[in-house]
Image 1 (cartoon, rainbow, N blue to C red):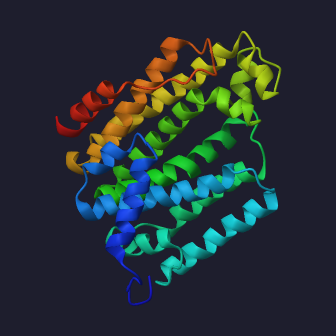
Image 2 (cartoon, rainbow, N blue to C red):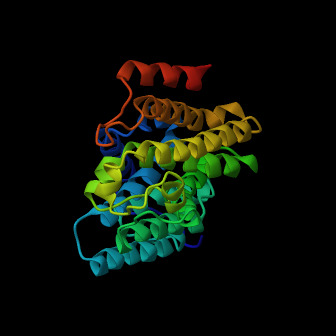
Amino acid sequence: MSGNGAVPGNMTALQSDIAAKVQASGTSFYAAMRLLPQARRDAMFAIYAFCREVDDIADEPAEIADKKRRLDGWRAEIARLYEGQPQHPIARALLPCVKQFQLRREDFLAVIDGMEMDASEDIVAPPMDKLDLYCDRVASAVGRLSVRAFGATEPQADDVAYHLGRALQLTNILRDLGEDAERGRLYLPHEMLDAAGIAERAPMAVMAHPNLRAACHQLARRARQHFAGARVAMASCAKGPMRPAAIMGGVYRAILERLVKADWRDPFARVSLPKWQKIWLAFRYGFL
């Protein structure tokens, strides 16, 4: 990274503003982020804010060309970030983190590429390899940025990101089936739909199919495999830096099990955890 590293404006005020927005977003990750030391917490808040920014571009009701133009603008902003001359407030907040925690340019760009997959088309019953690529870009790439901000230095930390990112994203897919269908999206892979005897591909038709639950349980099994892979990789890493990842994994594994128990009888019903359970999981994985 070139440049003198100087950050224009009031960095403390900028970081405080980003932290407030992250807290207001209601993300399940906020409690895990709060466990980190100040500098690492600021880095995670900035990473999360970047992800929200590009995700909002992909999801907003706008022309595809406009979405691509704005995502290209973020690619240019990431280039400026690594030249030491960012302009966007979020990129400015990322500037001290990039060098301090060795955040990689290719991971930021992978996140943008993943959002462009959503922006370019309504993803409907993708092949499994395309879904896996999507998960790597929108989730595991975020994990690769995150483990560095957490302070994990072992090679296995990227294995944690690989598995946990996929586990979390697959859980999100299974939780948001109805919401995605209403937007014309269906992330269940066509191989699993075929195996469940579902020939339909129209998202709302799939939601009404009596075999939907069979396809969902297949994807839930894959998510469980990734949760298990993440636990194995975490065991090879120092416990302290992995605590935020362990909390995220614990919370999302609990969400997955609630989904399995609900059996997708109503794919439009929102499944979430009560506050007491989130607190208990944060304590279990963050302090024990």
